[in-house]
Amino acid sequence: MRLDKLLSDRGYGTRKEIKKLLSKQGVQIGDVTIKDPGYQVQPEDVVVFNGEVVSTERFSYYLFHKPAGCVCANEDHVHPTIFSYVPNPKNTLFSVGRLDLDTEGLLLITNDGQLAHALLSPRRHVDKVYFAKLSGAITDDDIKLFAEGVDIGDEKLCMPALLERANDRGDEIRITIKEGRFHQVKRMFEAVGKEVLYLKRESMGPFTLDEQLPAGSYRTLTEEELSYLQGFTNHTKE
Ligand code: URA
Image (tube, rainbow, N blue to C red):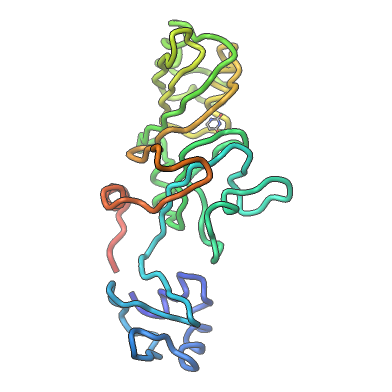
């Protein structure tokens, strides 16, 4: 990627501003000062600008275990946000979809809009698995109804969802959905007369919460997870 594009993608200014900055101070790559905005940055280059190392990875991806009580937003005057936990120095990150204030669980955080769009599209059938505790036990009829598509008052029925018991009583469940409508899981249970008392997203596509990621912590993706994402979007390497 061109040096000026890298710096503007990372939020250091417009290409024009960066051209000026580069002509004044340049960037350090090893022992060399580079002032040419058209310099082709190599993946192995460690680019230092204004004393900061500039990430040469095109996009950033983090897997975050959202705790209850924080909001999926960049700013909030009442509650902590996901960015009270995940650093977002350039304000370019956002979450792929949202979880409610009281919902816990897996959130992918990125600056890759194309990927977010693809992962959220119901057409791409990315499974999202939630664990929930309910005010009452589910019935076989609920399971059948969810498999057919439950009516939550939207224009269209929900897409078929897999509903499974997670305890003997049937008031703890796992549900797999392919969409991400507003308050979807809570509204699906409301449609069958149950209230969701606790909700946690356990996985989304190949991304799964594990024991090593306690609530409030985040990690970068594994090579395997990154290669899944590469197959998901048609990003060309620059
Ligand atoms: N469904 C909900 O109702 N809430 C969430 O946070 C996620 C899915």
